[in-house]
Image 1 (cartoon, chains in turn green, red, purple, cyan):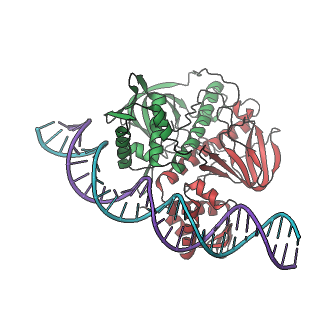
Image 2 (tube, helix red, strand yellow):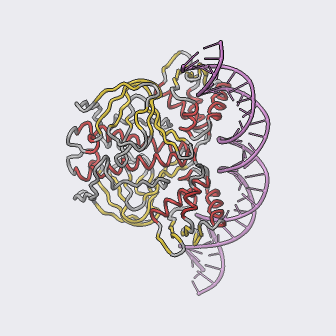
Image 3 (cartoon, chains in turn cyan, green, orange, yellow):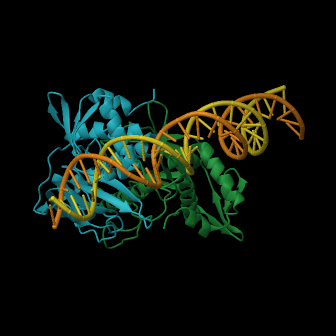
Length: 227
Length: 227
DNA sequence: CGTCCGACGTTACAATCGGTTACATAACTA
DNA sequence: TAGTTATGTAACCGATTGTAACGTCGGACG
């Protein structure tokens, strides 16, 4: 998932016009548990399978020789990941929160003869991915630190939050440094900004990995400070 | 094209293992001229066609309400663009340099019955796009201004430059502001850094839109200032 | 053919945001 | 519980931006 503003998550929508919402279920699907900290694959590995997160959370990331890291995306339930580029995975993939994934053999994406419906489903998911990444470009290229963080929390609250009397409770299954590397910031800036949002009454920090969004509207406004 | 470092342009490579390099040529292909400044489509338009640049250069971009702009990619010959997200285009597309494009009806991507070979080709191009975008995340999130610009010129030189005795001649069909909005910088920073690279003998500015890369190795080194 | 005009590009300087560093505190893990 | 890793806080500093003035290029039009 690209935790970005427009939040147009459309993996279940049609590529073009009509929208067959059924999730195709072929014999090619294989369920699998994933453990906390486990590496599902590494950048450069032969891409044998495409993954769909069912429960739990994973992290897609890349590291440069110099050690700088970019978190490419977080995989939440419903997200499809591990698309092959030139036959290989293009990122590392690690489990942040244990759960289960469904795997599809990569040939389903390659050819549409075996399982046409499943093939369509994966192509649709890839298109959705493209759109999400384009949104995230705007975040990385043209938003300041507070906007990025507000946008991140805003989308996370909308997609994974659980409503409660005081607002929306959101679980952050990743480290501060993961958020930082996802948003192109330092972990200190994440801390600073979280504190600031708490002081302003927008959020509450229940534990380090559980926050309460008190004022979702303010959060959304902060993510679009521009006119 | 995502003008990024690893330059693993794989639109013509296979999704997974085997690589059928033939460019499928179906009756569904339609050739069309594009004029300088023309808008091929806008964000939100119904996506009827997918485009492949044959000659010329186009620009994909998005604009926020507040007027901030992000250039998503530049489309050079060989690049496929206009992938639908939820049935709609997700960026604006304008012509920077007149040329020709091939258009494919979007249903070719939707279904694989009409033209399986062409369908495969477009899916492959989409996967390549995903990879390029992931590379670009690293540029936007974790590289400083000089690194971004050096990486940009480095890749452009490798992909579109023409060798000459003194180095590699590169045409920049876009404005400084386009480069800025692509790399998440200000146009002044582009100017300043170009000047600096000229002073250091790495490049020459022949005209504002034609540069000569004198020291490609230095340029590449500058794009990876870290290990 | 030359001049004018407007858009684009360059340069210099001051303001600022976010990174860096350093250290304190909190949360895991063994 | 001790040790280690992650997070929070604060002061400082540097890279990049924003602003503003100037330069330059190319097309329009007299």
